[in-house]
Image (cartoon, rainbow, N blue to C red; front, side, top):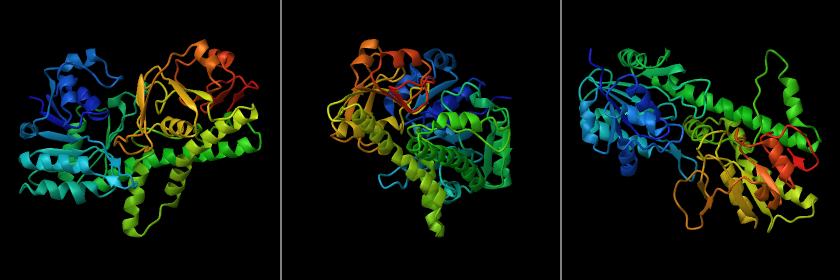
Length: 430
């Protein structure tokens, strides 16, 4: 039987890996994106995501190609929406890309097509926003075409769980839609968990991300407190981990980043207001996470002051601007607002990241719009001379490439927010 042709709208950190996984299972795949350069790069086997090699992309060209021509959606039996779901400057959901993608599908929707929204969003999006737009085509969801929500579960840099080894959760607008979606996913992922509705699937994804936000914010708050009472929190954590039940370790740091954990909880908080409900844990966790940049900058100021050095004019070498270790992704990285605030307070900031050669630092962490006062920094080499020249070395990402002994030996002062350097010394602060 000939494999069904699959369309993927949005070829970013979710869409491109999904397209490759499908093409490697011999599905004919058409990738759609409004970014002409991105489309051209794909068709030349040039990957713009570091974790995906050009060679891997080249192997599937022919089975997979990209286009900006949305009329080709009519050729596809299954359509996946994998566009970004961002926030406005007022922290409200920005569903513009989802709506635009859905309107494009509605213009070219044919009978029997399966449409699945994979973009993370608030409960009700599939049925309240996507479905009515698609039904403007004259076709009815669950009867003339099939509609479901199947949240992405991609974790960049995770070598333990491959893309297709993570269970896929999916909920359709009716049993027929769920059945179609489950049958599709079973062809390229190891396990599928069907749920009763898109709302359940949408809420599942938010729960996963909110769970991490709340727990990371909790340990960050405890870390701030243990600083005040001169207790080494990493030693506390190691001791707590010896309990074989009822405890799950989360590591403190400079804040959470990426396109999911810092943003997605706001989607639920916004939706909750429609029902006169205040999700206090979520809002408190978000507040703590947002405050981490200020806390880290205050700590830099305190450490420098302790050593009779003002922050204004100090040379700060930041190690790591990716939001987590061993990836080339600075999206919503906690390093960016920290660097911005250090610059604003008069520090001379340099950074080194083996995975990111340049980065734009903006006054607005969640808004992709370019401001006239944004700053672009280039990564410097991680040499003994760079370390020795810095008044303070600030570790914000614990990349495997960073050598703790080398950093500690050649630095005047180190503030290690990731507990990279295990050996304690008077000039190293945690």
